Image 1: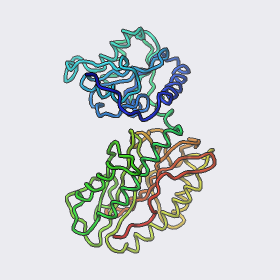
Image 2: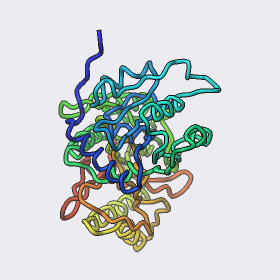
Image 3: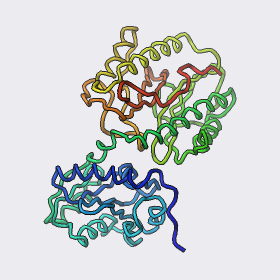
Image 4: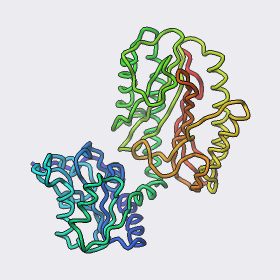
Length: 389
């Protein structure tokens, strides 16, 4: 019995729209075939979210073909058939003999495919920065007649502006984030292990919100006193204590899209220092949101926030956020001084205002937002407060 195609995150027309934008860029760069190996770009172009990027795989977009071709490990091919929008013949499985083989790997199968379909001597775009140097050299050595073009972020920049369908999915992810933040306020208690509280938070991220379950788990950062000066540390075996501060960063996930959200909790009353930092940061957050509109730049938003907190005696060393969507980070635009990327409708960002001030003290708050035709829509809605337990 053949595996059937599962529920699709988006209609076929949405994927063809995305491919149309990619092919336009390919034509502009004189590329006949684009080899996409970044796992998030593969999700964007096909709908595939299964965890198989630990071995070589790639989607090949041909400027002459309506659908892309996905070349991946044989045991993962059924997942691609189930998740991807393409017809079955666009899923090409390479044999297990290529796994753990010092002489051949899955990228040899990609090169074989390019040769088989007559693209080996054409302009070929490759996400070179996504490949180990030996794999990048393999494409050059085995395709001597091709014109190799570095197309590392060609698809990633196209992803920066979302469709209305993508925005709808991100709203679903944001609702899951909100639910998990509220659940955390219920399970963070004196004497409870950090690990046990995280188990409950993860359960909410999986169960989802409004009847929409989470379809993946993004990284979770949770720290309690005296580790609140850390920014990317997981939960520990320690227990929460009276007087503890807890910083939490999570992101609900739907079909590979996520919506980051950070909040700060205290067991007992916040210290005067924490309360003051919170008030300054929330005021800065609101100023940053007011600066968001089409035509403004990423730098404008960051500078508005930084000016706001600095005149109140606080500084933030790290950037204020980044493009956000499929996966946690879309490595294109940053909300930081000097990034002149112009904001356009349906760009989405994680306005990440975590502030790690000293080794043993930091504070977190964030929102995921969308640029609208006239301003901003904040997708996450959890209260902007210190959650007092």
